[in-house]
Image 1: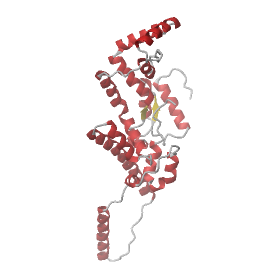
Image 2 (image 1 turned 180 degrees about the vertical axis):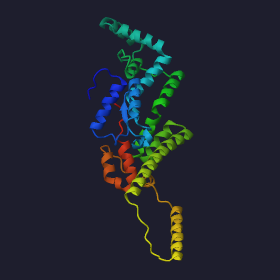
Image 3 (image 1 turned 90 degrees about the vertical axis):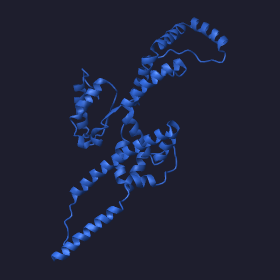
Image 4 (image 1 turned 90 degrees about the horizontal axis):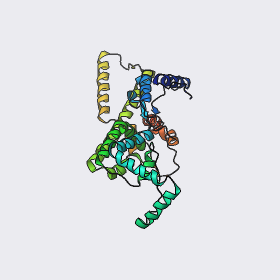
Length: 308
């Protein structure tokens, strides 16, 4: 899609809206993944008014998905700029000086072999807009409390929903389900925090299943409204039948049927294979969990990044 100048939020929103309608996906749309910039934020706000919340997942909570690669870059750049900018600039200037010519670099290597004989890595000047090249230049992890707090704040601002969706997608992989999350969270967090995070992701999935279940119930109810059949002609027998129907309803409510999610989680994990096609698995086996299949279809189709 080629968008003409100027690339304002209004122009971008209008062009993207035209594409969505021309592709006939407006009623199937669940999310849009874009780079993290103010123009895209404004564009998404405009598009929110064009699509009814009722057709969006959880009333549009995940309509705006921010590119994970760009967010990660912003997080690290903010941390570096907020805490170690002056020190980082001195390191960068020094590396630039020694790599400016072959003669200087040869002199540097001669001294380095004497002082640090085990170090064979070459100096590498970073690209300021790419945090991974800065990491390669520094060669060490810079652990400052202030930097961590700045990065954590950015993480909590942008990654809360993305992290939850990734957890849901993990559960929807029949090779992993809840076990992979429990395994890694136990390594990452303390026991209390791990359980809190596990519950948060599981609650999000149950919220999605409940929403899709309600939609399915309304759809089925509108398609078929069965009329009650009168088996008794007398008033007394009619009252008795009504009382029996109420009893049956209460009795059924005492032993609720297991949800698709409960059935899915109770089933054994399938064997671990590298070339596993998760979409084909849900297409083939999803009839056993129809509501969960719909959730998997929409969640697994979300792009979490615009970077290939």
